[in-house]
Amino acid sequence: MRVLVVAPSLRNTSPGSRFRIEQWMPYLEREGVEFTYASFEDEALHRIVYQPQHRWEKATGMLRGFARRFELLPSLRKKYDVVFLYEEASRIGPAIVERLMSLTGTPIVYDFCDPVFLPYKSPTNHYLSYLKFFGKTGTICKLAKHVLVGNEELGDYARRFSSQVTTVPITIDTEVYRARSWPEKSTSEPLLGWSGSHTTVAHLDGLREALSELRKLRTFRMRVIGAPSWKLEGIEVDARPWRAESETEDLSVIDIGIMPLPDDRWTRLRSHLKIRQYMGLGIPCVAAPVGVNCELIEDGVNGFLAGTHSEWVEKLSRLIDDASLRMKMGRAGRETIETRYSAAVWAPRVHAILRRAVAE
View 1: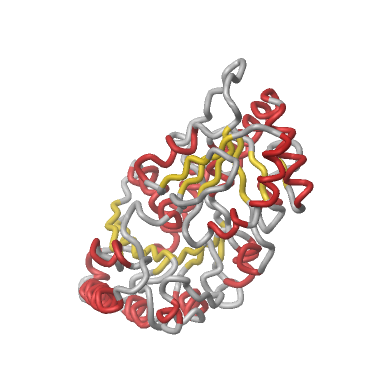
View 2: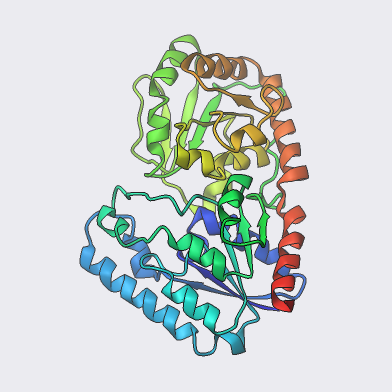
């Protein structure tokens, strides 16, 4: 089977596609599936797309992206058996490319794990938000042979447009994410960790007051990944940029993972990757009780849910105080990932969906 992967971002740069089709590819390649990855971005556009300004460079980068998309069309049916489309074929504009791909007769399997159909104004590219055509998600669902979604709430949306919808959660490659080891006795202050980006650091900012109060009661350090300038007075913070090549290494030394979130429509519909990364590494975590976090975490068993200021302080204090509890919860979280959210478990199911799309 020859699969063309169509995604907005370059390979190994977007958390979304990395933990969807890119993660499943090695498993399916062992079964003889051949993949070609075609991103809308090129290196030049990728370097500036999330930076402010650079309007002319972004505009020309978008035009190059459209040109690459149209170059795929003439030989699409001849060269590929199926298109795996992640989120959208182009960063901006209506579903023109997707319609043209469908007209070639090549079956499309469409995948999204976040509510990309909700209007959103980018803090760095707000002017481009007017060109996003968020409603095209429904159109692409109609064009696709099969639709994969990251959670049941997204499935409810997709089923308004397609009868062929399967929920496939975000998975963790347990061959790459190995459970961290726990020393018999910890000799250093526990390390709290958060991982995100410039667009989600506001969620961590919402926890500043609770962390400051916690620091008056307990001693701990912090590692912040993806927001290299983040600081909090009175707390030792190791803030560093996110890097794909060192992601698991940067995360694996964390003693307690945290995931604060606002409770809004966007966060309730997201599939939430970071909490799964903590759990996959055997790291106990405290997270806001929002959306799928309530499915991932059984409060007090494989992690903690904290919805109020006092709950954050109390539950983080418990984990800081008790190394054996950290180890017990970390192991329970790892077991959750192995049994319910492992790439090894879900990749064969994705393979079956691709085969069925080709056969129909």
